[in-house]
Image 1 (cartoon, rainbow, N blue to C red):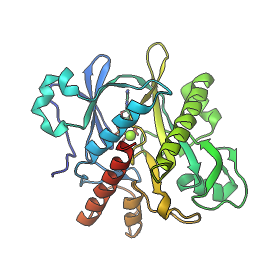
Image 2: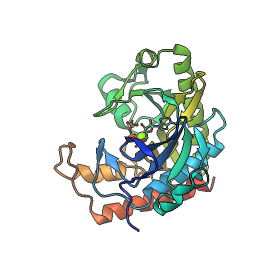
Image 3: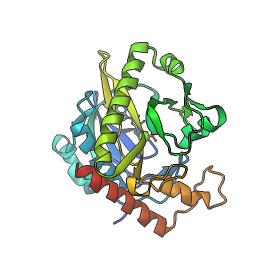
Image 4: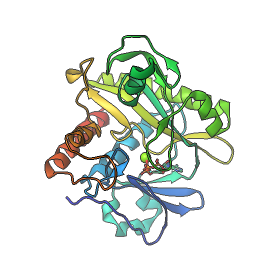
Length: 293
Ligand SMILES: Nc1ncnc2c1ncn2[C@@H]1O[C@H](COP(=O)(O)OP(=O)(O)OP(=O)(O)O)[C@@H](O)[C@H]1O
Ligand SMILES: [Mg+2]
């Protein structure tokens, strides 16, 4: 199967091309979100795609959106070819495109973490705290936190996202009450999903949510949810405190990149076929686990 790294729907206007998704305007209040097979690491997009990754991500998100009842979500249709019949001319979009409510995005990446890893581990080693949250001394990499924490980050227009404090979030979003809801819901969904995945032998280390509001100020869960692109999943079998556990997310590609002499700036180095195949196999493995919940 060939990777779909570009889309061009002539009948619609493309509003945005993200690292992974192409966003089209369906009409004044609906968007068509198309997950391509593009993959990025360190915020740099590779020229090779990962065949079928877009469908895997879309199916995983759709599955979670169907189960999450803590908050309304942006989904209108997971079969947009019914609402937009001309999509039949684009068979490569099957299982990649969803029709969603067009909302005003709240520009904070809502990260919930149950384990000390990644940027949180780095920050902890410097000052024993993460996003202004004090943590016990002597914790090790990948160790479970006393309780899940909310570690929001700015959605940087370019470059890397930056961790911010709760107070800075209020400045960005404008309303303390909204940020409180974002925090509460993120932690609630994180813990709920953590428990469901635990029963399947998977540890949900951390995950990122995005929210949007409609014209009445009602808050919705948007974008993608609990996918390998937005989350760090580990297998309970291979999890060890003090290590970097093997995972189902992009860490796999990141680890490969660390073996290269690449400064993490564009252009991205070529991805070997072997890495592409191993990556899609991992994505499909976690899809099967999530879709069997
Ligand atoms: N319902 C929605 N209404 C408005 N915007 C949305 C909605 N759902 C998702 N989005 C936005 O659509 C884009 C999806 O593209 P993609 O995930 O590829 O972006 P990205 O590369 O992660 O870029 P960004 O850093 O802006 O998130 C994101 O910017 C996301 O915030
Ligand atoms: Mg995104």
